[in-house]
Image (cartoon, rainbow, N blue to C red):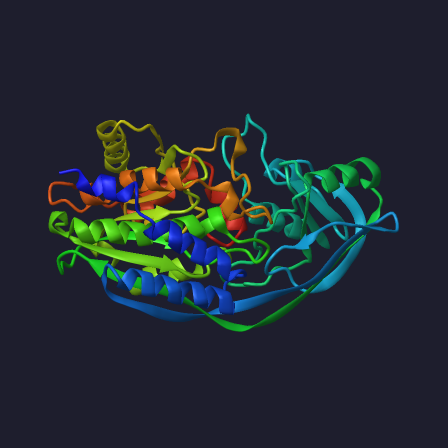
Length: 433
């Protein structure tokens, strides 16, 4: 029976929730807006699933104040990176290009202000995360950090610093647009610059949203996303669309509940953008041996083709490809590890997990983490098409005939080493093994 497909491609449920989220405004972790978004998501899930509720947890709060970058007696446009400490740093600007580990190796950068780009070269075999670049700079003695966007358009990038053990970073950190970064490199590399950040710190509260469908089995499938967003934008792609899709999938799966052989638990996390705090809290409280798989949605609907990072679990790759073939829609699968979204807090325990995003090609992160992450960048048609694919996949994953073995955590650690991820995770304090 395919009536559910017709209902999904005409449904307003998920898209209406997306509009609700972006209209809230600031959804920064620990803010009133994040809580309002979580409450709205709980209420939306309650229309389709049972036991909808919030689970609170404490976090390090951070609220943006003023930030400045001065070079040549003129202010250059910038924004503070979340969880940057307050303070001022003056020193020689050192442009380290991509900010790869080898570009820091053996460098004494004491008292300097280090600038790096947000990308890596095409030939490089892995992503070097913003926080890895930041902590390489800190270890080398830098007094300040400048993170330059590699996409044009006058958009300064955001993204947090800090570690689980020390949630606030060590030195002031700002993001600048590609154009400002190019100007700084051309005119002021080797010259004195000043970075200044003013931010408020306080204890804060975030929350995860929970709801359930299907039989009351011990084994369960987690369908997840994060509801928080950076405070500089609407957070439409990252990750309003993911949260809205969880609501849409609850609607679809409620109509297909008889097809679910294990419990489907919807979990919408808080505080992802400041270090996967909500998912870490949930994974620590959950019997991860009872989790069949995690279907985590982060950055969907930015392009029509879904991209599935399958974290080394071949059965997940096969399941995603099978759904694409069955419904005649292309999908992209990547078997490698992806340690930078909420699914990762389960993968480290050996739980099979997807990170589902969009295949944006050379656009990469695109508008996300900038002020341009707004609703007008998304199409309702794409959202609805992806809802069909993801609902079908969720039903397959919850079927009694589907099986996927958990991994041993030591094998996940070995895969991190083999994919050259371990060094960066140790630098950022994220190595859990």
